[in-house]
Image (cartoon, rainbow, N blue to C red; front, side, top):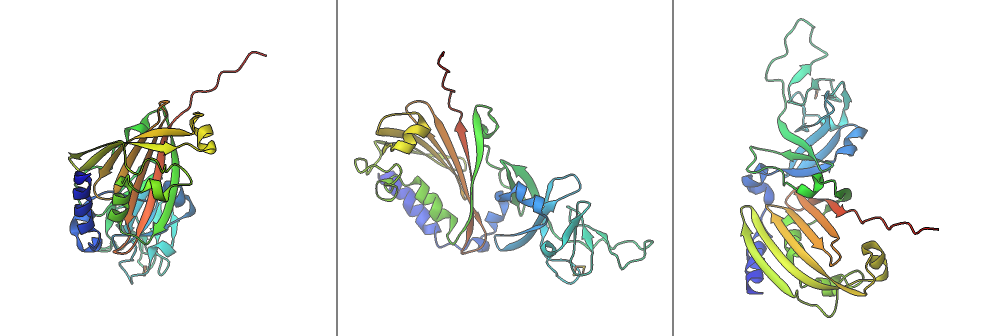
Length: 292
Ligand code: FES
């Protein structure tokens, strides 16, 4: 376990880091909200303390700009979307997804709109059912979750919750295979397995990979879900920590079923994160019909 504790110590040093004070975090992609949430009109989100407004532009693509109008600083997220433009609720100025002001109702039609009438725009992409935003020149791409594009898996949206918690604390918790015995006793934690049977940690380009095998209990409901009748089973775990705040957890059961959980703790502020998660699960083989 010594290597694991070394990793713990490194992460613990980061727990108290003020994420908004570290410019490097502005150079990663983060999921900020489910794409379908934008169907309800403009939405506000704080990313690393930066107020954003997100909406669907004229191409029906997600757009993100600073949530402060360049005129008198009204919150654009309180406005509306018209023909793919975000319209300020105060004096009606309209902005496109690049942040350019494209309409000033108080100007005569023949007057050109000054080029400095604009708001900061941010990189914005849709992936895995979420809208992802990067505030500055990205160091790496959005994490590639190959199972999400594989027809042998179903992609299922899971939790989207605000947490009063630092992202790295959650990352550390997910890699910690000593806690299921005590915390997850109502679902899979086994008293007989306070430590994993196997554990191997390797460095990757942008994080670490933890491989482990853990004995678990298999209660009745889970027996149905997994189509496994045994009261005890094991999980083979491949956990990728993808810097800075994403964990891809792949669980493989002895019958071959796979369950991939992707959790990102998107940094909202120095004190809060938004938990964004989705799952890719293998599709169980249909049970063959018995002849009548
Ligand atoms: S504050 Fe936005 S148009 Fe005036």
